[in-house]
View 1: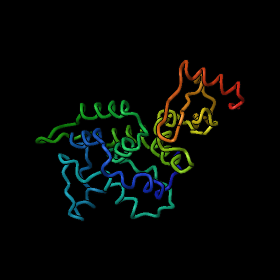
View 2: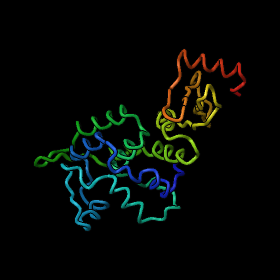
View 3: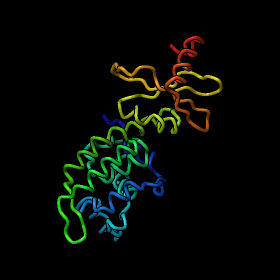
Length: 225
């Protein structure tokens, strides 16, 4: 369940207007854009171009225009269901894997309800629900963890485990690197943990045989409790 605030959403996404989002661009340019109401009406009121073929208005503008008109202390609401917005947020935050987003994207654009003129139309209720289920909690998990002194690149590297309910924690320092793993509220059968080693510049994922060796070494040196 999302516990991040609108203010935290703003803080996380502010300045990410030009972050590459080729999957979202492909989705919108395929015609998956709200037709009227909501941000489309707001864009028209402000004389901002509305053209799905140009991917306008941008989802960055959509998010900021929504959040900046609301109390930043309020929880980011689960009632946000706009598929293209959540899809963009998930892509830019790396909270959902490209493979998963690509799968949903292909399913959407390959299954239009109808085509009128040169524009496809889609079952937005169905696909918005699919996108919401896939993306919403994962987005919030990444944003929440941005604010507990976990390096952002570690959060990105652990995005898949976070999506499964994992909570990133620091274990120890080992050979000059910070060691992080994901813990879970509910017991899960996952075998040995996946380690994320942070040297202040980059993250290294450690699992498999290398992970087993690291796990044994942390136990031997009493760094793992």
